[in-house]
Image (tube, rainbow, N blue to C red; front, side):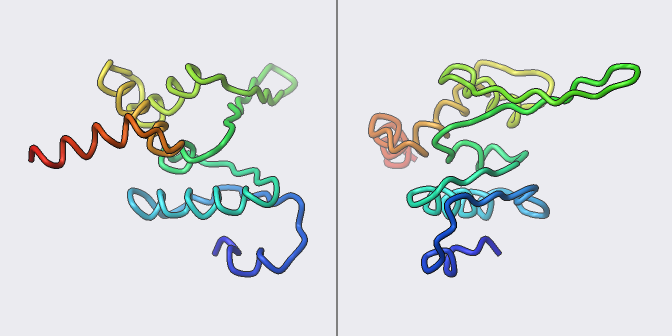
Length: 130
């Protein structure tokens, strides 16, 4: 588990989670993302994830890529700005072909995760119409 309960009593300035999303998806992944975000309120949390539901809930997002040469392999880590986060979440959602709709879904996920009231209002309006 994510140690959310025990983390409250421990003084742990940094927590690192690798492959925290193994074997989960959908709503469970969103809940895991929420728990990680809550942990981040009191400490630094680094999390390696492949799920957009987890990544969208981060306060900051880094892209990690591996560059393999003939004799060496290098890892590159770079922070993503707001538009790059949309692109990365869209890539995680849509795979190879990124469409306008995939980008809109990524924007919506990021907006909801950050508490964007205009995105939340739009979602409530859609629910009322349905």
